[in-house]
Length: 380
Image (cartoon, rainbow, N blue to C red; front, side, top):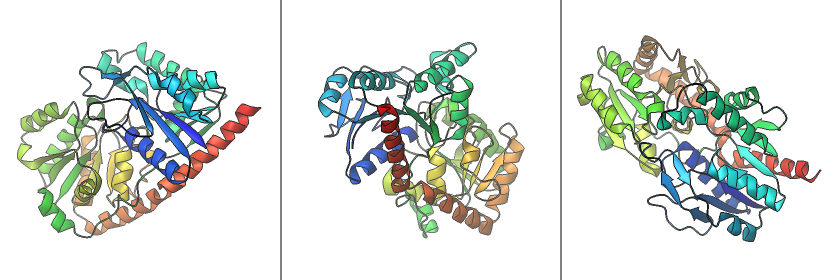
């Protein structure tokens, strides 16, 4: 099958969406399908045989998180590629490219909604009503133009339905997780020494941005540090890093906080294994790749009972879900896990077992089934 994939976020950008798109494209190719990705050229982008890069600009102040794309030449390239189906991964310019191309070439369009665009309105200073309603309604309208729609979380499909997408076939399909890469390692003490991680490490992992609610995470850790010798370890980077560093300094926990920056591949897996527990305070997650990657590496999770996190974390089995507004609930559950190695190990094993169902092979099989159904629907 010849499959065109469009996205407004792609390598080398640090993003769960990017990981998902890249993993899916690679697995489709491994299984013998022809895949061409249409994505913005970003600082550090490298020419790739199966990727068409078009010009783009990062919105000032977004730290590269919000991309303005200009897909000049993409339609011509796609005409030459002759896809049988188009799969778009974001409501944006690349999504509009996918819709125009699907109509022009009379082929089906599959849309995957990875995030709620309304959660990023703060970059435009528009994060208030009625703009939130308008953006959510526009997102629902856009995906209703697809032949079929998927999302990694029922939470986001419910939002699309509530804002008007009533007739388009919908299905929850997880993001693919590289379970062969993200795995438990047995040399924790050696890894702690290698990365300078303390005996009781609480991990913050992912893009360092305002919408991740990291100031609250720092406040939670400050309370935790009063009764433990825990260390806060931050893996990732983003536009909010400077503010977060200033926040931990003001809270007096600078000497108990370690920023490891962006890590990839085996180094990332090692850093995850050096920690004891993952802390997630974001309330805007759809299906956080970082949570699933950490679970795949055997880490228990303490996360907000909000957004799509409850669809990832099984409360009392793979971690704990807490009221996203109550810092003392976070502190209590973090303390419980830090003080009980056997509990951490049991939660870690259970989490790993859950994520094994999200391997690239399994998820790609499900997407191929969606593609075949979409082709059938389109031909009627």
